[in-house]
Image 1 (cartoon, rainbow, N blue to C red):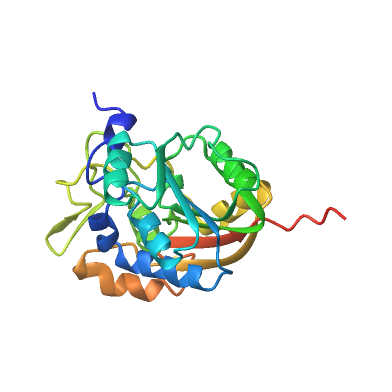
Image 2: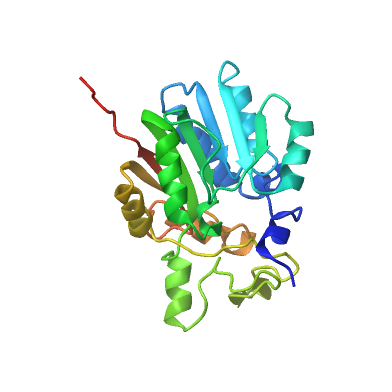
Length: 252
């Protein structure tokens, strides 16, 4: 029986250059948002896969120190060979992070929180390691997307929800295609969030939401044009991103 840990050691599940190419809209949107922030001198990419996105940030900010960690040993082993300028290590995001308090200016959580049982520990640890006024950019599929509202109205399973670590469960058939593709392994999603709920969770642990963005997270061309229309409305988009900030602590 395949466990979650074995799943995350599977190429095509953990983040790679090819996987980011398939999610180009989200990838470009993340870089655009980061462009609006003060230059981050210390960056952490949580659930970094092989560290491809970490390497893009290092190239963008060559004077900055960029760290990344992932639970997948295979991913980190590959990443250390591919991206030697990034400080990569194996670590469990559901336990204490291996970094000091107030250590980073920017934390990236790209499509990671949906995979976690201990989301409370995760958010609390990100808050701990961020410097006062530091930013978190977190992205995730949207439980209450336009597509999921239609599917649930028809009594069908929401898209991106995965009840199995071993079998890909199909949500719908459209234009002769089955979604998700049954030939692809599950991604390991354990929970999905709506915009309101993730914002609320972040606020419980002290974060202030700066802005919420919609993302087109569906990749098949037969539905992509429709999905892109909804990214203007984060609560209806197939995916969303939240830019949050740790408040400045005035100790005087």
